[in-house]
Image 1 (cartoon, rainbow, N blue to C red):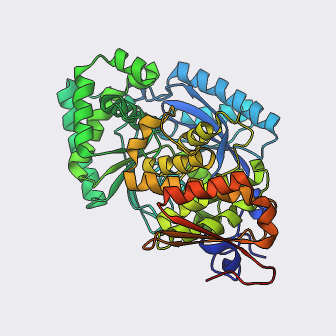
Image 2 (tube, rainbow, N blue to C red; image 1 turned 135 degrees about the vertical axis):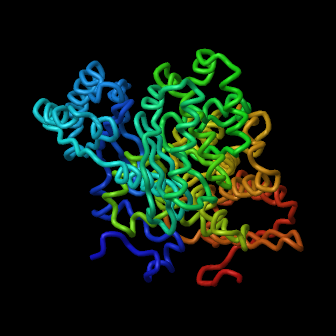
Length: 524
């Protein structure tokens, strides 16, 4: 039997374009909890992934800033204090993994350990002290894994992935769900601190290296994906400068003009004040002035059409490495939503029924919109435990801030608004009203319609499967037809009637309600 059910087989008639849920398959469950360790030049981190295999949640995430690569350019050896801290962290991580009952941790080390003369000695010490075997990877492999991490969050993404660590910076091209050409360089902030000639000498060095990288990579005018803690720190500062309302780094977008403006903003402001205002650690903030010079030159040289920040990188790439191709090609948003429904909804499985029920209101919608509609239907009941007075806002907050891959910020707001309207007729006056502007008015209205359709459909929620009726929408005539099975007549009480009328009002439609006799086919 195949590990993962293909969306192109006979089940498409039942499950639609998103395919059969994968997390029920043994092959997917085998990946449900995976621990990885990233021994970087600046930090050492343990991440334990859990949840739907295609879009895992972070069951555990701990980082220790060790600065293993500090002073490496001068001494050729790992930072002695950083080495002690890293060993202590790895002892802890290994014991945590044992306590969690995890399979063996996957551990990789990058630039600092591979460049240091005592790198092999450090790996032997870690193996002896903890039993953890560290795989030291070269720059091209580091670039590949980071690019795979981006593909974990963005199936089908194309462009240039740039991963900056403490002691190196890698570039990798992605297209057609594969990683193509890739290169590595020494443009890590820890190494740039040791460049002679002050900032002028450093900027000349950066320019020279990036010109060499461009010659190796060729034209890269598509999207630039930024991976790494220094890039995320710069994104936080950019958000602060712009007064951006949604503090979610993953899929945050910048333009070349934003990068230039933020470089100027960093130069003109006190770094300690920015660090405090933006929630950046002191050790990370110390690297920002070097990283912004790299980013400014990178954008000026490659001229990408836009810039996206990725919270997924080498650690997620290690998880992606273990996935079969069919699993990689699945939509992370849909699989995460399905997993949430199976775990938290009162009647798991009703989300599919609800999706079929509301879909006629969105005939002609593109796939990008239909996946949001599908996700909303799957998530419509997962927050039922929240207090009724706050349930609508809890839904919005979960959708906009949750660790969901494959979502632009505007799509997060669309999903949040739809779920808010699942529990509330009005969106005005909520604590999240300042976020609505990330979505145009037409999309806000579509989210309201979707939410109110789910709100009505939920009144018919008795079992996970079965006939709950059908909606038919005639936009030109402004007529909404609701046809319910005769068996649902008792479910259509005062509250259900009120919710149907609210949906009709949102559509500016006349509502026609009929009950279908047993054995009669639905109207076309």
